Length: 314
Image 1: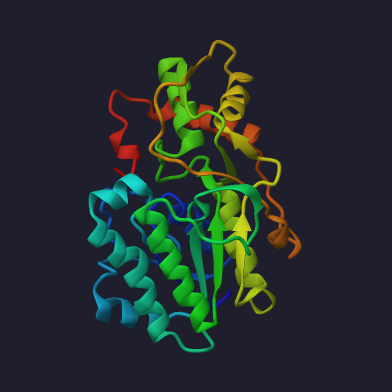
Image 2: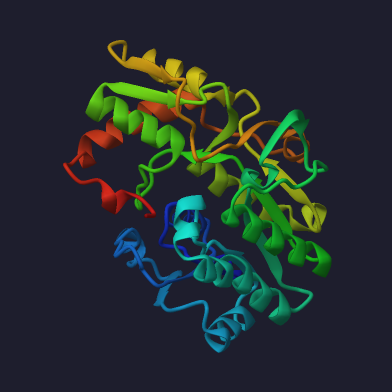
Protein backbone atom coordinates (compact mmCIF):
# COMPACT_ATOMS: atom_id res chain seq x y z
CA UNK A 1 0.00 0.00 0.00
CA UNK A 2 1.29 3.45 -0.96
CA UNK A 3 1.52 5.46 2.28
CA UNK A 4 1.79 8.92 0.67
CA UNK A 5 -0.89 11.16 2.17
CA UNK A 6 -2.70 13.40 -0.31
CA UNK A 7 -4.89 16.34 0.70
CA UNK A 8 -7.40 17.56 -1.88
CA UNK A 9 -9.28 20.72 -0.97
CA UNK A 10 -12.56 21.11 -2.81
CA UNK A 11 -12.33 17.45 -3.66
CA UNK A 12 -16.07 16.85 -3.96
CA UNK A 13 -16.29 19.06 -7.04
CA UNK A 14 -16.27 18.37 -10.76
CA UNK A 15 -12.55 17.60 -11.00
CA UNK A 16 -11.95 16.48 -7.43
CA UNK A 17 -14.51 13.69 -7.47
CA UNK A 18 -12.70 12.19 -10.48
CA UNK A 19 -9.18 12.78 -9.15
CA UNK A 20 -9.94 11.39 -5.69
CA UNK A 21 -11.07 8.10 -7.20
CA UNK A 22 -7.97 7.86 -9.41
CA UNK A 23 -5.64 8.40 -6.44
CA UNK A 24 -7.56 6.03 -4.15
CA UNK A 25 -7.29 3.33 -6.81
CA UNK A 26 -3.53 4.02 -6.96
CA UNK A 27 -3.39 3.30 -3.21
CA UNK A 28 -2.61 6.83 -2.02
CA UNK A 29 -4.02 7.83 1.36
CA UNK A 30 -6.54 10.43 0.20
CA UNK A 31 -8.19 13.06 2.38
CA UNK A 32 -10.82 15.30 0.80
CA UNK A 33 -12.00 18.47 2.53
CA UNK A 34 -15.04 20.24 1.09
CA UNK A 35 -17.82 22.43 2.45
CA UNK A 36 -20.36 20.80 0.07
CA UNK A 37 -21.73 24.20 -0.89
CA UNK A 38 -23.62 22.65 -3.81
CA UNK A 39 -25.02 19.85 -1.60
CA UNK A 40 -23.27 17.31 -3.80
CA UNK A 41 -22.96 13.62 -2.92
CA UNK A 42 -20.25 12.92 -5.47
CA UNK A 43 -17.93 10.95 -3.17
CA UNK A 44 -20.36 8.42 -1.71
CA UNK A 45 -18.87 5.68 -3.88
CA UNK A 46 -15.45 6.14 -2.20
CA UNK A 47 -16.51 6.00 1.44
CA UNK A 48 -15.98 2.23 1.75
CA UNK A 49 -12.26 2.50 0.94
CA UNK A 50 -9.89 2.31 3.92
CA UNK A 51 -7.51 4.77 2.22
CA UNK A 52 -10.18 7.47 1.76
CA UNK A 53 -11.19 10.07 4.32
CA UNK A 54 -13.71 12.90 3.97
CA UNK A 55 -13.82 16.02 6.15
CA UNK A 56 -16.55 18.61 5.85
CA UNK A 57 -14.99 21.97 6.58
CA UNK A 58 -14.17 25.52 5.55
CA UNK A 59 -10.71 26.11 4.06
CA UNK A 60 -10.98 29.86 4.67
CA UNK A 61 -10.46 28.98 8.38
CA UNK A 62 -6.70 29.54 8.68
CA UNK A 63 -6.02 27.21 11.61
CA UNK A 64 -8.21 24.45 10.21
CA UNK A 65 -6.35 24.49 6.88
CA UNK A 66 -2.96 24.88 8.58
CA UNK A 67 -3.59 21.74 10.62
CA UNK A 68 -4.58 19.76 7.52
CA UNK A 69 -1.54 20.88 5.51
CA UNK A 70 0.84 19.81 8.26
CA UNK A 71 -0.49 16.22 8.16
CA UNK A 72 -0.07 15.50 4.43
CA UNK A 73 2.73 14.83 1.96
CA UNK A 74 1.03 16.10 -1.20
CA UNK A 75 -1.32 19.09 -1.37
CA UNK A 76 -3.73 19.60 -4.27
CA UNK A 77 -5.80 22.78 -3.73
CA UNK A 78 -8.85 22.35 -5.95
CA UNK A 79 -11.17 24.44 -3.77
CA UNK A 80 -12.12 27.50 -5.80
CA UNK A 81 -14.90 29.76 -6.89
CA UNK A 82 -14.72 28.80 -10.55
CA UNK A 83 -15.62 30.89 -13.57
CA UNK A 84 -16.21 34.59 -14.15
CA UNK A 85 -19.95 34.73 -13.29
CA UNK A 86 -19.56 32.92 -9.96
CA UNK A 87 -16.56 35.06 -8.97
CA UNK A 88 -18.27 38.29 -9.95
CA UNK A 89 -21.22 37.36 -7.74
CA UNK A 90 -18.98 37.46 -4.65
CA UNK A 91 -15.53 38.88 -5.38
CA UNK A 92 -14.41 38.92 -1.74
CA UNK A 93 -15.18 35.24 -1.26
CA UNK A 94 -13.54 34.40 -4.60
CA UNK A 95 -10.35 36.19 -3.56
CA UNK A 96 -10.30 34.53 -0.13
CA UNK A 97 -10.66 31.04 -1.60
CA UNK A 98 -8.81 31.29 -4.91
CA UNK A 99 -5.86 33.29 -3.58
CA UNK A 100 -6.05 33.33 0.22
CA UNK A 101 -6.15 29.52 0.41
CA UNK A 102 -2.89 29.34 -1.56
CA UNK A 103 -1.22 31.86 0.74
CA UNK A 104 -2.17 29.78 3.78
CA UNK A 105 -0.95 26.55 2.19
CA UNK A 106 2.37 27.94 0.95
CA UNK A 107 3.10 29.73 4.23
CA UNK A 108 2.75 26.44 6.11
CA UNK A 109 4.48 24.04 3.74
CA UNK A 110 7.73 22.29 4.59
CA UNK A 111 10.40 21.84 1.86
CA UNK A 112 9.71 18.09 1.61
CA UNK A 113 6.00 18.53 0.88
CA UNK A 114 4.65 18.59 -2.66
CA UNK A 115 2.20 21.15 -4.03
CA UNK A 116 0.36 20.80 -7.35
CA UNK A 117 -2.05 23.62 -8.15
CA UNK A 118 -4.63 23.81 -10.93
CA UNK A 119 -4.65 27.11 -12.75
CA UNK A 120 -6.45 28.13 -15.92
CA UNK A 121 -5.88 29.21 -19.51
CA UNK A 122 -8.22 32.09 -18.62
CA UNK A 123 -5.25 34.12 -17.45
CA UNK A 124 -4.13 34.43 -21.09
CA UNK A 125 -7.27 36.41 -21.97
CA UNK A 126 -7.04 37.07 -25.68
CA UNK A 127 -4.04 36.80 -27.97
CA UNK A 128 -3.27 36.48 -31.66
CA UNK A 129 0.00 34.66 -30.91
CA UNK A 130 0.31 30.97 -30.07
CA UNK A 131 0.24 30.78 -26.29
CA UNK A 132 3.10 29.11 -24.41
CA UNK A 133 3.99 29.12 -20.74
CA UNK A 134 6.17 32.16 -21.43
CA UNK A 135 3.28 34.24 -22.78
CA UNK A 136 2.25 37.25 -20.68
CA UNK A 137 -0.85 37.24 -18.51
CA UNK A 138 -3.87 39.12 -19.80
CA UNK A 139 -6.66 38.27 -17.33
CA UNK A 140 -10.09 39.49 -18.45
CA UNK A 141 -12.05 38.53 -15.31
CA UNK A 142 -11.76 38.61 -11.55
CA UNK A 143 -11.58 34.81 -11.63
CA UNK A 144 -8.52 34.91 -13.89
CA UNK A 145 -6.90 37.62 -11.77
CA UNK A 146 -7.19 35.58 -8.57
CA UNK A 147 -5.66 32.55 -10.27
CA UNK A 148 -2.77 34.67 -11.58
CA UNK A 149 -2.09 35.91 -8.05
CA UNK A 150 -2.13 32.37 -6.68
CA UNK A 151 0.27 31.05 -9.30
CA UNK A 152 2.69 33.93 -8.78
CA UNK A 153 2.69 33.28 -5.02
CA UNK A 154 3.65 29.64 -5.57
CA UNK A 155 6.30 30.38 -8.16
CA UNK A 156 7.85 33.06 -5.93
CA UNK A 157 8.07 30.45 -3.16
CA UNK A 158 9.88 28.16 -5.58
CA UNK A 159 8.46 24.75 -4.72
CA UNK A 160 5.39 23.59 -6.60
CA UNK A 161 3.87 22.75 -9.97
CA UNK A 162 1.15 24.87 -11.58
CA UNK A 163 -1.11 23.43 -14.26
CA UNK A 164 -2.80 25.91 -16.59
CA UNK A 165 -5.87 23.95 -17.57
CA UNK A 166 -7.73 24.30 -20.84
CA UNK A 167 -11.54 24.44 -20.86
CA UNK A 168 -12.62 21.18 -19.25
CA UNK A 169 -15.24 18.77 -20.59
CA UNK A 170 -16.55 15.31 -19.83
CA UNK A 171 -18.63 13.41 -17.30
CA UNK A 172 -18.03 13.46 -13.57
CA UNK A 173 -19.85 12.29 -10.41
CA UNK A 174 -20.30 16.01 -9.69
CA UNK A 175 -21.59 16.88 -13.14
CA UNK A 176 -21.49 20.38 -14.62
CA UNK A 177 -23.46 21.67 -17.60
CA UNK A 178 -22.03 25.21 -17.50
CA UNK A 179 -18.73 24.32 -19.20
CA UNK A 180 -18.63 25.07 -22.92
CA UNK A 181 -18.47 21.57 -24.44
CA UNK A 182 -20.81 20.15 -21.80
CA UNK A 183 -23.16 23.10 -22.30
CA UNK A 184 -23.21 22.72 -26.08
CA UNK A 185 -23.97 18.99 -25.90
CA UNK A 186 -26.64 19.54 -23.25
CA UNK A 187 -28.35 22.25 -25.32
CA UNK A 188 -28.11 20.08 -28.41
CA UNK A 189 -29.97 17.31 -26.63
CA UNK A 190 -32.56 19.54 -24.95
CA UNK A 191 -33.13 22.30 -27.52
CA UNK A 192 -31.84 20.85 -30.79
CA UNK A 193 -30.29 24.25 -31.48
CA UNK A 194 -27.10 26.17 -30.69
CA UNK A 195 -26.91 29.96 -30.90
CA UNK A 196 -23.29 31.08 -31.25
CA UNK A 197 -21.93 34.44 -30.16
CA UNK A 198 -18.49 35.46 -31.48
CA UNK A 199 -18.20 32.05 -33.07
CA UNK A 200 -14.66 32.70 -34.35
CA UNK A 201 -13.18 32.88 -30.82
CA UNK A 202 -10.86 29.92 -30.17
CA UNK A 203 -10.11 27.96 -27.03
CA UNK A 204 -8.24 24.83 -26.04
CA UNK A 205 -10.01 21.86 -24.41
CA UNK A 206 -9.18 18.93 -22.11
CA UNK A 207 -11.17 16.02 -20.67
CA UNK A 208 -11.63 15.95 -16.89
CA UNK A 209 -10.11 12.46 -16.68
CA UNK A 210 -7.04 13.60 -18.58
CA UNK A 211 -6.61 16.33 -15.97
CA UNK A 212 -6.73 13.70 -13.24
CA UNK A 213 -4.13 11.77 -15.22
CA UNK A 214 -1.99 14.93 -15.33
CA UNK A 215 -2.04 15.32 -11.55
CA UNK A 216 -0.96 11.70 -11.16
CA UNK A 217 1.79 12.28 -13.74
CA UNK A 218 3.02 15.29 -11.73
CA UNK A 219 3.07 13.31 -8.48
CA UNK A 220 5.05 10.49 -10.08
CA UNK A 221 7.50 12.88 -11.79
CA UNK A 222 7.58 15.65 -9.20
CA UNK A 223 11.34 16.06 -8.91
CA UNK A 224 11.83 16.68 -12.64
CA UNK A 225 8.72 18.88 -13.04
CA UNK A 226 8.93 20.90 -9.81
CA UNK A 227 9.13 24.69 -10.02
CA UNK A 228 7.47 24.84 -13.44
CA UNK A 229 4.14 25.74 -15.01
CA UNK A 230 2.52 23.65 -17.73
CA UNK A 231 -0.33 24.21 -20.15
CA UNK A 232 -2.68 21.21 -20.08
CA UNK A 233 -4.87 20.66 -23.13
CA UNK A 234 -5.42 18.76 -26.36
CA UNK A 235 -3.00 19.94 -29.01
CA UNK A 236 -5.47 18.94 -31.74
CA UNK A 237 -8.36 20.78 -30.07
CA UNK A 238 -7.70 24.50 -30.41
CA UNK A 239 -11.23 25.01 -31.72
CA UNK A 240 -13.46 28.00 -32.25
CA UNK A 241 -17.11 27.76 -31.25
CA UNK A 242 -18.26 27.04 -34.79
CA UNK A 243 -15.80 24.17 -35.14
CA UNK A 244 -16.95 22.76 -31.80
CA UNK A 245 -20.59 23.00 -32.85
CA UNK A 246 -19.82 21.25 -36.14
CA UNK A 247 -18.06 18.43 -34.24
CA UNK A 248 -21.23 17.95 -32.20
CA UNK A 249 -23.38 18.08 -35.34
CA UNK A 250 -21.45 15.09 -36.72
CA UNK A 251 -23.09 13.03 -33.97
CA UNK A 252 -26.39 14.94 -33.94
CA UNK A 253 -27.12 15.59 -37.65
CA UNK A 254 -30.41 17.38 -36.94
CA UNK A 255 -28.68 20.04 -34.83
CA UNK A 256 -29.48 23.60 -35.97
CA UNK A 257 -26.56 26.04 -35.62
CA UNK A 258 -27.35 29.77 -35.63
CA UNK A 259 -24.74 32.52 -35.57
CA UNK A 260 -25.81 35.69 -33.77
CA UNK A 261 -23.72 38.49 -35.24
CA UNK A 262 -25.49 41.26 -33.37
CA UNK A 263 -24.68 40.28 -29.78
CA UNK A 264 -21.46 39.51 -27.95
CA UNK A 265 -20.48 36.89 -25.39
CA UNK A 266 -19.52 38.01 -21.87
CA UNK A 267 -16.56 35.61 -22.20
CA UNK A 268 -14.02 37.20 -24.55
CA UNK A 269 -11.27 34.61 -24.28
CA UNK A 270 -9.66 33.94 -27.65
CA UNK A 271 -6.36 32.07 -27.99
CA UNK A 272 -4.48 29.08 -29.40
CA UNK A 273 -2.47 27.18 -26.79
CA UNK A 274 0.65 25.05 -27.12
CA UNK A 275 0.87 22.03 -24.81
CA UNK A 276 4.28 20.92 -26.07
CA UNK A 277 6.10 21.53 -22.77
CA UNK A 278 3.91 19.03 -20.90
CA UNK A 279 4.01 16.51 -23.75
CA UNK A 280 7.81 16.53 -23.60
CA UNK A 281 7.62 15.17 -20.03
CA UNK A 282 6.04 11.98 -21.38
CA UNK A 283 2.41 12.92 -20.80
CA UNK A 284 -0.29 12.23 -23.39
CA UNK A 285 -4.11 12.47 -23.26
CA UNK A 286 -6.54 9.57 -23.53
CA UNK A 287 -9.65 11.47 -24.64
CA UNK A 288 -10.50 13.35 -27.83
CA UNK A 289 -13.28 15.88 -28.29
CA UNK A 290 -15.24 13.26 -30.26
CA UNK A 291 -14.89 10.67 -27.51
CA UNK A 292 -15.99 13.27 -24.98
CA UNK A 293 -19.10 14.19 -26.97
CA UNK A 294 -20.04 10.50 -27.16
CA UNK A 295 -19.61 10.14 -23.41
CA UNK A 296 -21.63 13.28 -22.65
CA UNK A 297 -24.48 12.18 -24.90
CA UNK A 298 -24.81 9.04 -22.79
CA UNK A 299 -24.46 10.87 -19.47
CA UNK A 300 -27.05 13.52 -20.28
CA UNK A 301 -29.67 10.89 -21.04
CA UNK A 302 -29.54 10.15 -17.29
CA UNK A 303 -29.71 13.69 -15.92
CA UNK A 304 -31.75 15.83 -18.31
CA UNK A 305 -34.48 17.51 -16.26
CA UNK A 306 -36.57 20.64 -16.39
CA UNK A 307 -34.09 22.29 -14.01
CA UNK A 308 -30.38 21.67 -14.51
CA UNK A 309 -29.24 24.31 -11.97
CA UNK A 310 -27.90 21.60 -9.65
CA UNK A 311 -25.35 20.81 -12.37
CA UNK A 312 -23.80 24.29 -12.53
CA UNK A 313 -21.54 26.39 -10.29
CA UNK A 314 -24.02 29.28 -10.24
